[in-house]
Length: 429
Image (cartoon, rainbow, N blue to C red):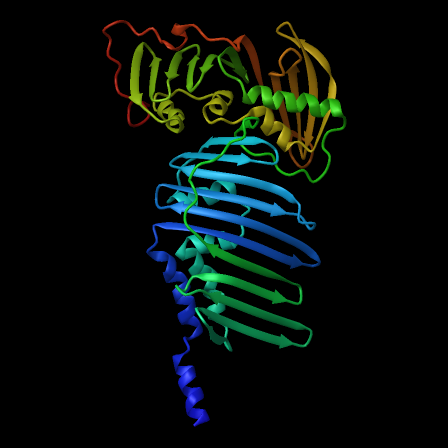
């Protein structure tokens, strides 16, 4: 009788692969995914923990909040991301930074998000994409000697193995609907644990602090002191903020000998070079080259490619303005050490010169004392044997800053009655 009862219980218990199949299938039909994932680990004596809050309104937009804690439980990173279409927004609450970046769409919204933020625990991808969950579970399906237990609404799948001083333990806990709620993996080297709480969608928007600085990429947490003095830090921070807030400006930009006049106000930008000029008002792009005018509706991220169809190259400093990348911040973030190297005068303005060193690279940043804006940025790169492989320089001469620009600043002067042609679908060559 006892044998028959045990056999009956075993027959009612699902097999491990059936539990794994339900973990994958539970997400396939969902158009809304929302969960909180807590990850904790200890490897070679080092403890780490992180909290991920994930919200996906398929296929429109996705929000991800990331908090990383140090060994004492203090936050070392707290960021919030929102991806919608080709625009990635983010807030770094600890460093008071507001990210706004145009991104190149991938095969789907989540793939685009992973490509642009990186550094995520595998659990975030596995819980949000059935294909990623399938890939994650594949090696576990190949193991034997699993035990399956039904505990109320939950199903536990457990395995333990030992060989001399080595051991491994694996535990999966699935909820009523088959969704993964807990994972714990342990070996003699350490352990990893996921705990998942499912919930309704949060509002798919970001609350940006009023004091946040606009950036094109977040600063990375400092692992050591890069500034050799407080003066160097103050000058660098001031310049990062000054460029982030740059608006209502007319300036001449030069990059490696190529010059262009640039007007920027709000979401509008106009560029005038020796043989071409163009203006983007946030919705439409108008360009004039070789006596011909062209016009098309466009999104901001499409502007460089559309200009390329007319054989108009977008200078790196202009591309940075279009894509909300802060060149000062990029150079400061990439540097391993920063020091004040002296002062100089450029275009009648006294500037503080910063020297920024990195691996196989040396940069200088001339910061205007009057307003913190960059006047010049140089970069030199060396190969591994010490030969200089590249040198570039970009300069900024500001003709007007901080006050409304004249109404005709964003007009190309196309003759009255002239009808601009549509942009060519392919380069004209």
